[in-house]
Length: 134
Image (cartoon, rainbow, N blue to C red; front, side, top):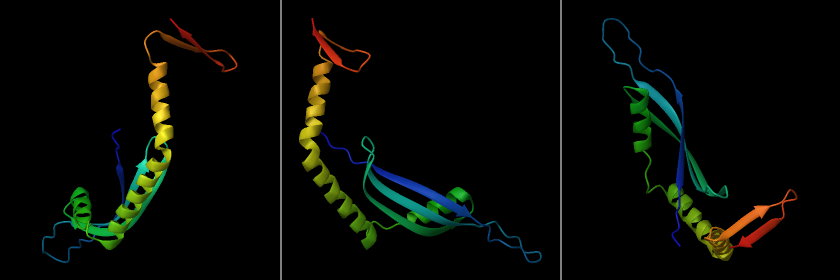
């Protein structure tokens, strides 16, 4: 079975303008940002969050997008806290699948069984399941 780990990244920004013009000197606008970046290792199907890591980073640029890019480029994968986040998330993901793999495989088998050709399933008004094999 193929395992997929999805890293969800949320970027929230607060914007302020820093450029000021004193006199006749032309100043191009500089956009400073305080960027809140959240990394989340999550199973989207079950909504289980294995690990999360939040960090505030400052960035600046000639536009809002350039400032965001500048801030994100400052994130180092060698950062000890980021590495710890990845390692702890990885351990929790492996533990989750080691514990839940039999249940997940059973669900897959049942799904395949109920989708078999010649098999018809119906529920009555009480929610009881009836299976007809043709």
